[in-house]
Amino acid sequence: MPDGGVLCVHAHPDDEALWTGGMLARSADAGVRTGVVTCTWTEGTRRVEELRRSLSILGAGDPRLLGYADAGSADSGGEAFVGAPLDEVVGRLVGHIRDFRPDVVVTYDAYGAYGHPDHVRAHRATLAAVEAAAYEQLYPDAGAPWPVRALSLVTVPRSVVLAEWERIFGSPPDPGQVLPGTPDERVTTTLDVRRWADRKWQAFQAHESEAERGAGPAMFAGLPDAERERLLGTEWYIRRELAASTGEDWFG
Image (cartoon, rainbow, N blue to C red; front, side, top):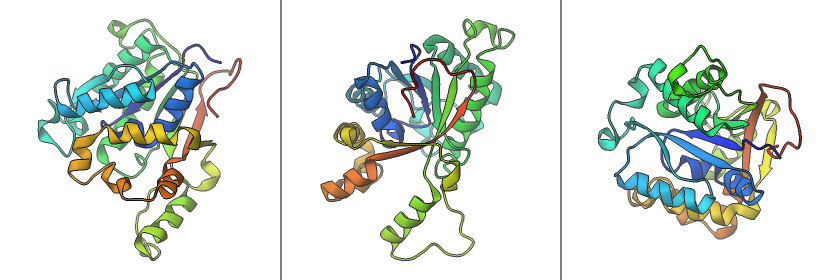
């Protein structure tokens, strides 16, 4: 089992539960050190308190915050995450990577899993930060260099997107419509996290402010237990090896 563990980079509070909650709970139970960097919202806001509860349920430590504003909530932080200078964002992420020293960093696929601009920005900044963290010449004030062994990108297979689309909307998507998801053959890791689905759901429910506005957990609350477990019980990733693998590979 790698000593460094896994560090996730997510755009908003609640993404850690929805997209990677099963993996985080599974890893914590296996004795793997886990952490989450959240790019938007600031300490003292309700959503960060909800994030703190969610991370506690998942065994992922305390919130690590970049402190930017959510693209959809002007009062969520300082400068908007999507408009902040890329070099500044990358430097802050490098600091967290060098401080945590993970073997694996997790973020979204290139489309941000479903196209949200904050998610796309998190993907781009994380890829740059993972590369930069290993170079002593870059961001020398952000800590000692640290080479990340692997990068895993959260995604959804295109076949699953199409199946769920028809299940939810009752018909296939319109021709030419831009869809989320990744061609199935590019997905490298499928995690069965049904054993941890209850904890994942509890962590998701910790984000009460999102439920109150009809988002996030509210979209799952009315589902039968079996249907909710089916939707939350699998996570998909695209894994990229960045250095030679050694020892047991706990994550796919």
